[in-house]
Length: 271
Image 1: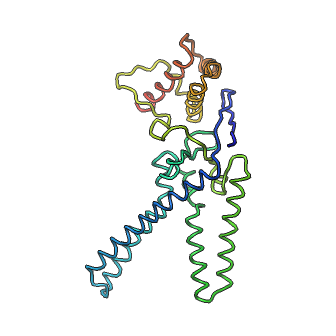
Image 2 (image 1 turned 60 degrees about the vertical axis):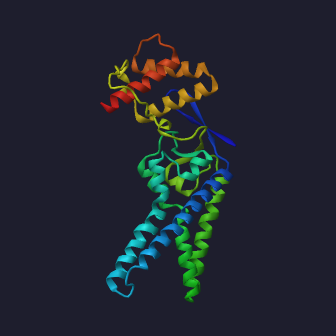
Image 3 (image 1 turned 180 degrees about the vertical axis):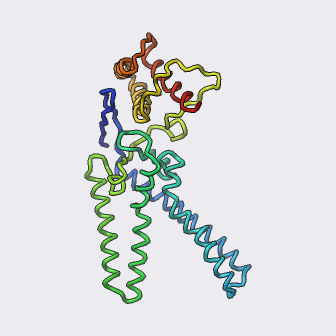
């Protein structure tokens, strides 16, 4: 397993574990198994509905066609992007394998980044592959071979990039500027910068709002890494840099100081 070091504005390198190829592969397999069983269930529902309709009626055929698209096709096509946006960079497969999509700075990926990754997902190329095989059955061999070899070339390029690249990025990750990292706990809302604070909470350092979202993500990552490793020096160094940058004077212990900063940010950004 390789470790990726990402510099922060506080002159502290954050370490992220790049997942092994087999973790990514198993996550993909799990997601496709889920989609396969969903397709079986949705198809059975459509067939059941069709059995109660007059399939020779043009209006019924039209309604059944769009029902199949909405119930079967759209959820399968949009599964990955909807899951990654709603589950903070994870699908069900990724959550089971404890991997997550983040941006190249280690922070939460944006919605546009998730969409770019989705536009270059394997699902689209599997559809192109199916079209190519259909063309072959229709006798259009040249178009069929072109589409099949183009798709195979894409998949091979993706695998080579993931296996050989330092960051383990596929083509979609390179264009979206995202990476996949290992997580050490089950993902939930606490994996973002969100921290629940009471309405009566009184912020101690309103200067925190001068920092960017990237800086806030870095503070949270530094705090988590320092706690996990028991590295007081890392927390002390980050706290000193932040105090100097924001002109804060306090004798609060470093871990407590970083904790309070995150609470202040959450309270002030929501009010």
